Amino acid sequence: MSDDNGLWLLAIGPAGATALYWALYRYYRNTDKSHAFEHETAVEAQPVTGSDEKVGENNGTQETSISGNNVSAYRTRVERVRDDAG
Image (cartoon, rainbow, N blue to C red):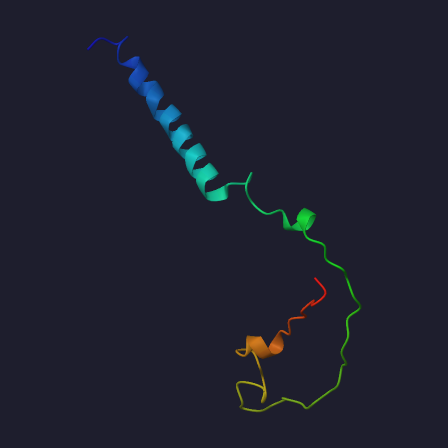
């Protein structure tokens, strides 16, 4: 094999890597088909409601958690507001 005929083999490496990167990027990102939440979703802001009430202290104790925590009960922490008008 002469040096002139093997030059295309060196050019195929970077070109193939670029083509593979672009194909994977388009496959996993598919930015042209994704949902643009910021532009296509209407979100109406409302004032924050609630209260700040002190329920107790946890100073100098040996307990590792605060009694009554609801960190694992996310369905009771987050309340969904259903819009029945639409």
